[in-house]
Length: 171
Image (cartoon, rainbow, N blue to C red; front, side, top):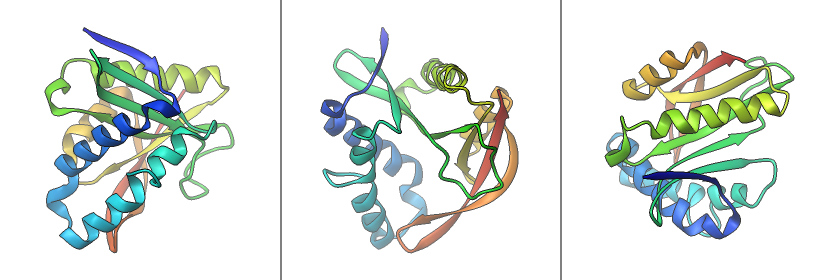
């Protein structure tokens, strides 16, 4: 049974380990070892972005847990995308990660439902996100939710620049 709850800073090491593992599984094949090491050192670990954001009240995290294990999480933030890709009352789904064993089991949908409801409750009128151009599974999921492509985003992975798609959902 999957339980859902808000995260707190004490969850940092577990979220960090899960997020890092999912990132490597999903994106690791597309980047050099050097660029992967650079990206992972910035995004994960005790001084990484994930843990800093977890302690910052400007970001909200929702966890999916199977027993003590974190099997998914969503991160809702104020938009950090380029101006012009969102309006003044937007929120951004900065991350939605689910472990492979739980994909297709409704975890991503439950986390997305939370993100949409939380954004609406906070007064947002749109939700934006980015998705890697070579992640068709995620793109299909976002399409089913009603997100539409609005622009490209240059996502820096170490020294490598990847093309992400900026997608928007009117709330």
